[in-house]
Image (cartoon, rainbow over all chains, first blue to last red; front, side, top):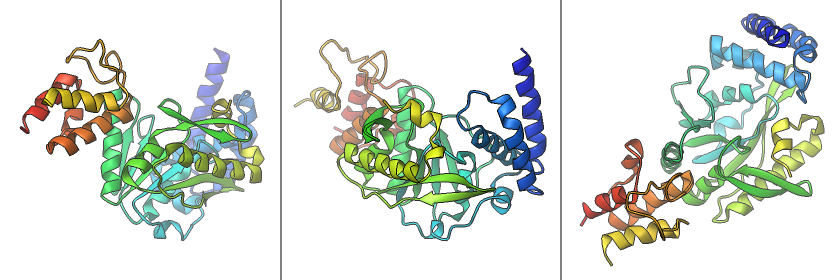
Length: 249
Length: 76
C-alpha cells in the first residue's frame, strides 16, 4: 500500500517534470536520477527507467517535435536510409524516445508495438498494436507485408514480450528473438536495420547498425541481429536490460 | 484436385495437422493451431493459387477452413 502510494506520488512528480523537460532537460533528468533508486529498487537500470518514464510523459503532453528539439541528437543518416526497410530495435536504453527518428525517415512508417499508442503519431506514421489473438496478429503482420511491398518502413522490436520466437546464438548462450521481423524479411525481401536509442549523457543518441541483407533463412537473419546486439553490449555492457536477460537462456 | 483438397494442402504445408480437423476448425488457437505468421502465409498462398483476394478475411469473423474453401470456390 505504502509502496503503491509512493509510486503514484512519484508518477505525478514525473509528469510535472516531464512538462518542463523542454525547458531544462538536464535538470529534470538529474532529479529523476536522484529519485529513481527510492522507487524502483528491483529494476536493473533505474536511471534508464526513470528517464524513459519522463520521455513517455513528455510525449503524451507535447508529441515528438518538442522531444526532438529537447534531447534527441540529430543523425543525418536517418533521412538517407534506403527503403523498404525493417528497422528492428531492442528494449534497451531510451526506447521511449525512439519515435523522435520517425520524422526524419524519408517514407511512411508502420510501427508495431505490443501496447496501445501513447501519443498522437506523426502524419506519415501508422501505429498497430500487436497484442491480441492470432487472427489479429496475422492482420497486423499482413499489413506490415503490404507496407514493405509498397516500399515503406516497418519499425518493430526484435526482443518480444509475447510472440512467435526464434532462437539465436548470443554470448555463448541462446537469445529468443521475435520471429515476425525475420519472417517479414524472408517474405518481402526487405533488409533489416538493427538500431538502439541510447542515453548519451543527457541526450538520446540513435545507434544504427549495418543493414542485414534479406535472406530466405530466418535463423541466419536472427543470428546476425543477435550478433549485432552482442557487439553493442560488448561496447556498452552496463546497458543490458532485464528484457534481454529474461530472453537469454 | 478439388478446391477443398488444394486448400487443405496449403494449410498442411504451413504446419497444420488436419487429421482430426473439420472444415469449421479455426486456423489459429482452438483449431488448427497455426500462429499469426502461418495464417498470413496461408492467405498469401491462397491468393497466389486462386487469384482472388483473401487478406480481407482477416478483418472479419474467425477464419476457418470452410471460409477459405468458400472464397477459393468463388474464383472457379
